[in-house]
Length: 281
Image (tube, rainbow, N blue to C red):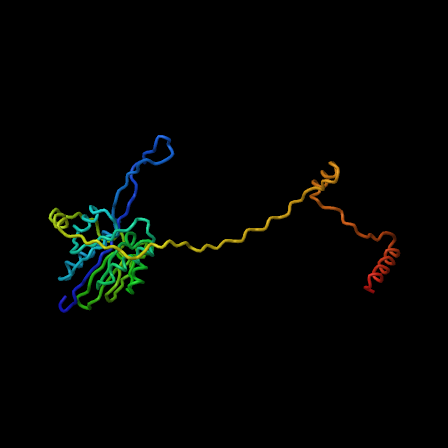
């Protein structure tokens, strides 16, 4: 790739912690006394690291800076053995939300000028973290990448994305950009012994974030609580039999009304007198 600018790649990976085996309960059989956990890195994060190494072999002068979100040094060393040139550990808690994590990563990358940022679709970039980082830094975002290469002819980056159900999409774009790698990218490879020894000799930098963890709650829409309906209670002044009648009738009392009774002519006369008396006629 003659005349091409050197490529500086940042790879974002994250430590994930999960319990293994059955928890050991205390004697009272209610509280957990000990839980065995294991640390691992998502396959998509490892795919991002492998993709960076492939680009390094393709483009001379490429450097890979590994950023690790976690605290386990042994898990980090295993990722470094894939082919990192520099490594930075960002010690964060496992329960940080995506927004705070993106702010921390942005703070760590703001003084560096990377051409390409690679991360896992379900690892360090999962749960919206990758989208937030791209938005904070102002980079083009490519998701679900299954292959990535740099074109020496046009000086562009070519990514093949998966759209599900075997469908693929080819995207050609200019750097800088942030690419999120899918789990199906490439195959899992094991580092050789010389690579592991070389990774053990590399110095690990530590980054202490200045971003504070602010707790936030989502606003939820809730329907107003319906007003309680009045419940009928029988009149305590009535006798027991009358109260039972009120309960059986649902508390409906007989309305006092004036009834017009008699032959039709007599009823008509009564109605006319009533309308005149009320001032209607």
